[in-house]
Amino acid sequence: MTAAAATVAGPGSARGTQRRAFAGASAALAVLFMGNNLPSALYGLLRGVFGYSPLTQTLLYAVPVVLIVLPGLLVFGALSDVAGRRALVLAGLAVFAVGDVAFMLASSTAWLFVGRLAQGLGIALGTAAATATLGDSAAGLREDPAAAQRLAALAGTISITAGLAVGPLLGGLLAQYAPAPRVTPLAVHLGLVAVALALALPIPGRAARAAGRWRLAVPRIPDQVRPRFALIAVAEVLCWAVLGVFSAVIASLLGSILRTGNLALTAGGLFIMIGTSAVAQLGAPRLTPVAAQAAGLSVLAGGLVLLLAAEGKHSAALAALAMVGSGIGHGLVFAGNLAEITVATPAAERGGVLGAIYVVNYAGLGVPVIGVGLLSLWTGLEAAAAVTAIVIAAGCALLVPLVIRRRA
Image (cartoon, rainbow, N blue to C red; front, side):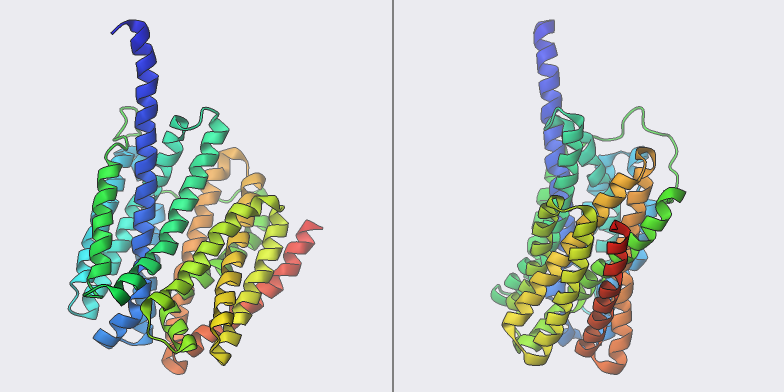
């Protein structure tokens, strides 16, 4: 091969490697988050098998988020810079597979917790490294650096959101219509993990120039951003609390509203909510960030009110509207918040601020769910979810004028 030919082949080969790494990272994110939400369709079924309390049901969802994923953002966030992206992505998928096996073969509630904790560790290990890989390898798909980073951000959002939405739907369909409803959904996901492992192999390993020492990643909020960040953080907690509570109790709640035990139907509610959130996030750039936030908070509050009405009337139509409204509200608030904080934060500080936003998001996903579980000890699960919906809707309504005032 001539030097000229080598020059041509080199960049082409590099771009091909980057594209394969991009695809592998996207697949890893989708499969990890699909597995995270897949058990949401099974909690009601498992509650009948193991006889655990509503508090235990909420803890099965929340404990991995609070104890593993949330601190994992700080512990593992920068580790891939030292150990290499591929090592952490593969480790995350492998550990998640162990969680699938433990959850699938569980003979007691304790083993369900072992499985969920392993799944949480898999997400904590793999998420930051896979997301960083998207940013590293996007140049293989777009020549313009700014366009490449926009593509990486979009791919990360779509992979995570699609995984969160498809997971419970897949679990519900397989649990309802396939044999061995406790085992088959996890076994199918285990096969998807194996596929993701194979696709992740082209992700680059440790670079020779990688930093030699790992440091704990502690998010820092610049002084000039703190007033704006405080309001955004409250909105993030509210919108992600809705997603967390719904993920933990949606099967039981919709089963009560619709008076059905069909697992595919009850899990479909979470699919509708997260799917409409994804659509809203894609459409949010047409609005200003503050308009998206104000509209999202209003629609989110309306969706929660519709959920209360659906629970009182046992109406399938109101329940569907509640899922759509909650999803649109979640997507608009999240996208509007990210757009505003990204523009307001200096580029040199942006990584730390966005890291802090994701810490807030995971806190919103997990902590309110534990509150629902504790409240259910006195009121029952459905009533506890209703009280939580009222509190979040009131919080959204109170926040709207503050957001509008900031715009003025």
